[in-house]
Length: 130
Image (cartoon, rainbow, N blue to C red; front, side, top):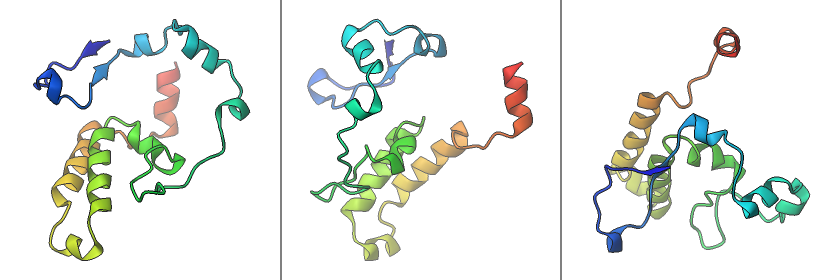
């Protein structure tokens, strides 16, 4: 794993750290004992059943909700979280005045650039598998 070299903040200003791994590293065996123990647990042991839906009790966006998990985990996850957080912070009337337009457009530009939600047809899947 390597740090993203494009992030230029002093250590005290950094809120998030972007880590990148290769596909090969992603599929390597799990080395951390704690993580390995989690990978062997059944879903009933891992899931406490608590999921308040897309909105947390405090009104913030629940990014762990299965309804948005795929968006958060996508290559455009940062942009999605920024747009969703902005949307949650504004009222409906604010959107007519352009609130969150830049954040939403950044998310859409990322989606178009990375094609992260592009559907694959059956032929492409078969080509990849051979």
